[in-house]
Length: 234
Image 1 (cartoon, one colour):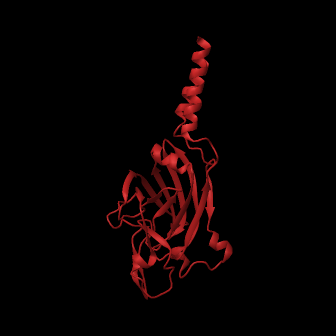
Image 2 (cartoon, rainbow, N blue to C red):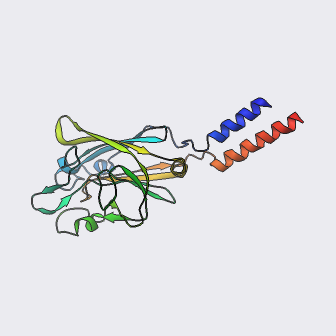
């Protein structure tokens, strides 16, 4: 009976465990494979190479993004000659069937840098830039909307250059997830990131649910094992 009880409690303890496919998972720039000239404008300023879900340790999800950004390692907003709006780095979106989360790489509209938010809406490039004339992707969803946004956790990030080029970057994000968020992500989610608020290059990915039993199922199984143990003792 003691071994049955131990197994039941072990099952209950896995309620918030990550049950999605084993990390790392790498998403390549799918637009580049379809069209080598997928970047509108200067690829030194916008190009995305890949996004990697690296690991989940102690509820901290590490995400690495290899991309080019005109503002350098500080992710400073920048301007392009002949294109009026100032361009900023995009937000990272994680979308489950029920919720959209946004990790803010550089604060805007009152949303904090490195904050993970539950959001109710997004802003397209045309909304952020004021719908200017010029070559950009106006419908790209580049920023979280501050309206109804709820800060869930605070993470951190480090950004370094690649090959000593000031605009060639590798950003390593450390996103804090609580048990509720992990349980939600276990239902499967899509991700999206635009290098800059013009949407001139973007990357998408999809992480499907694995079919692992839901937390409620684990709890019922654990309770059943405990009951069996009690009956055996009697």
